[in-house]
Amino acid sequence: MRLNRLRLRDFRNYADTELTFDPGVNLLLGDNAQGKTNLLEAIAFLGSGKSFRTQKGAELIRFGAEFGELEGQLTSQDREQSLRWLLFPGSRPRQVFRNGVKKKTVSELSGALRTVLFCPEDLMVLKAGAAARRRLGDGALCQLRPNYEAALAEYGRILERKSRILKDRFEMPALLDLLPEYNDRLCQVGALLISYRARFYDSLGKAAGGYHSHFSGGGEEFRLEYKTVSTVTDPFAPVGELTERLHAHLESHRRAELESAQCLTGPHRDDFEVTLSGLSLKQFGSQGQIRTAAISLKLAQRELMGRESGETPVLLLDDVLSELDPGRQDFVLNQISGGQVFITCCEPGRFSKLGKTVFVKGGRAWEGPEAGQLCKEEFHV
Ligand code: ATP
Ligand code: MG
Image (cartoon, rainbow, N blue to C red; front, side, top):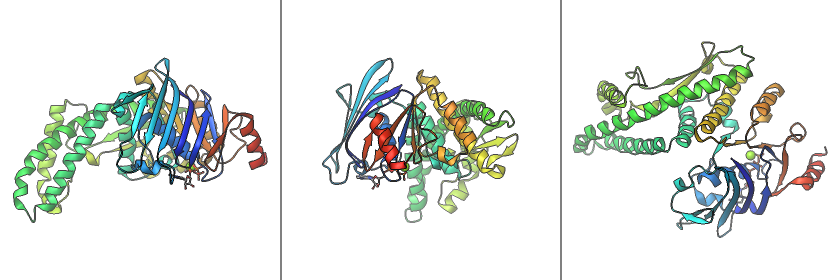
């Protein structure tokens, strides 16, 4: 799949910009704070209705504008398609059109444009806390499996209510009568999450291992292990069995939960661990190894999504290449071929031979020879 043309009106710092793109590599070049990430955000939003930077739709509308508009022409599912969004400040609901027809829900876009984003924060995700890894895994799995996304949202709702019961029960002890019902549902939906995650992390680990092996010249054995509730010895077990295992763990933590007034057990605390030739990456990995492994995971995510739908998703690389040494940059640039890619960059030169260059400045963007000329003037190259 690929994005051929994008028009932004009053989106972030873009007043009115129209661009056409290369089916391969598109380099978005410009100084800091000019609108490069905004452009990636627009591309990701176009296909998903979600921003990777904010939950508040109104922030996407250019300051002072009455509404914002995004429109894209794409080639996917073997045909030309168009997507269009209208965003309004305040309570007026946003609108989305696919091929000119207004849609009620984002799910009706059914993967017309899928993207995988890789940003500098992702480079250190393997070193970060479990929450960051869960976000990364959940984000990827939600894109792959809409049913998982629904189950995850349901789990979040039950967990929130249970937390409130545990906190409020000091004032209202009768609330405790509701706890068994919430625990039952938590275990049922939690078991479903574990089942999805076990399969997903297994495939992700295998695919990422392939990339990492190329990265390290075959010298390191990459392994990814999914970590969940300790009573779940086999996360591939049938969901009914997983539910029982979760119940057992809950039971053994019942008192601790009541005393601490916190939900202490369940897959909301899951994690995954990467080891290189048996050594924990989090504990012993060098910066380069951690970054390399993180990139391998993202490329693996793109591969799994591509395998699933038969179309390689669009890869959005925000500012990551400049953080890598030249050898790793070369590896990434070689591995990203075979799909459409958008790369943001502040320094011209190294990547300018690739595909198409778009020059970004002050919420405006230029392409073609004009972009080349402006880059020369701006960066003296
Ligand atoms: P860097 O290289 O530093 O990452 P960038 O080119 O990626 O920079 P962006 O994050 O795309 O920069 O754009 C940032 C600019 O967009 C900021 O100056 C910010 O003030 C402006 N901006 C963000 N939201 C809006 C909005 N709703 N309306 C107008 N301008 C906005
Ligand atoms: Mg940026």
